[in-house]
Length: 97
Image (cartoon, rainbow, N blue to C red):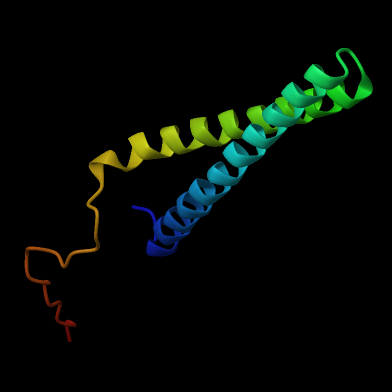
C-alpha cells in the first residue's frame, strides 16, 4: 500500500495539471487566433508561421496534459474519494513478557 504522502502528492499534482491544462487551452486559442490573423494579413509570411509553430507547441502540451489526467483519473476510480476511518476496530497488540 502506498504511503499517504504519495496519494496527497498525486492529488496535488492532478489539481495543478488541471489548472495548467486551462492555461494551455487558452494559449492554444490565442495562438490559433493570432495565426489566423497573420495568415489573413500576410499569407505565407513569418508573421503567420511563428504563431503556427507556437500553436503546435501549445496543442502538444495540451494533449499531453489531457492524456496524463485521463490516465490518472482511471487509476483513481477504485479509490475512495476521501480518507475515511477504517470500518473495523483497530486490533490492540499486547507485548508478551
